[in-house]
Image (cartoon, rainbow, N blue to C red; front, side):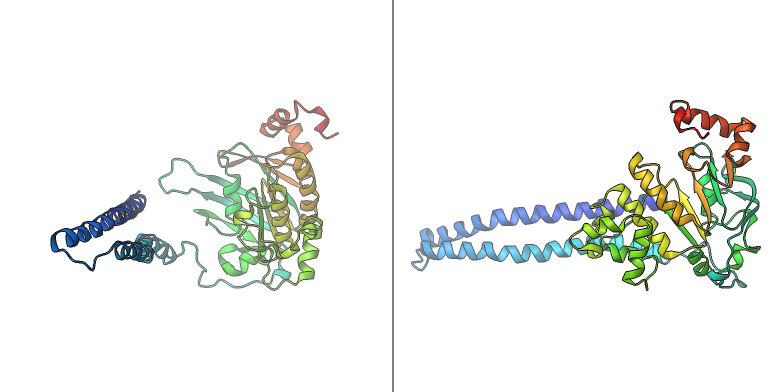
Length: 366
């Protein structure tokens, strides 16, 4: 709250400075010609100065107007700098903030080629705020074996996304532990862990640069051939090849030059380039049309091969073949099993399934 008030104060101060500056400039530009004409008239009428001619008066007025343009530009730049200082101060404060999640004293780097990808949650409890009334994750325990597809299902706010945040250590559990191949994540260096986990989310973040540069965020040393291979696997190479500049095409701010499906397939290609041992899919296709979803599902199937995958499912049709489905409600795992087992259980998962497929019986698995 205090930080928000400070930011609001900076913004108000910046706006006041700008309005005062441009108001003063407007007054000066209006008064200066009038002052010149008044002084010239006074010299002609009262002092009888014969050196004041109409030509000189017009020339002087023109010079005065031309002089104001660079002066206005310089003063405007000064105002922008003053206005930006407050914002820069906030940015530097953020950059100087200590990291809440840090490497432990005994943490080690691990070789991605030696990681099998067995993920285990042991009695994990977590809440975002210490004074929160209820836990965001409540006594969560499960094991994902190497190469398995684990689907996370449940109503909004059940804790599905929060659970995946603990895998790359965006947060640490309040109690319990998250293990990778039998080793607590706190014993693995963060930089090393970052190379092991990849994600494809509903929102794809692209920078205002070329397609190639956006792909190399995942692997800076990737060759052109590696980019093409990844994009072929993600079913996006053919589209890129049709662009005038190919992989050197600038995608625009946040990738606005590309469609939602194209951005998602680029995100998948980026994940393929990274080659993580653990993959997180956070409703990667929920905002797409049926045609785009069909293309991306094929790409995702290629991406999930030989990786431990956690898929947050919005459409249950995308996770019917999952090895393990965890049904969460209010932060706790209330059901677990595969698709058929959960239907037989006739609990929350079966209800969600009926609600989604009731209007489309053809979509139901046989």
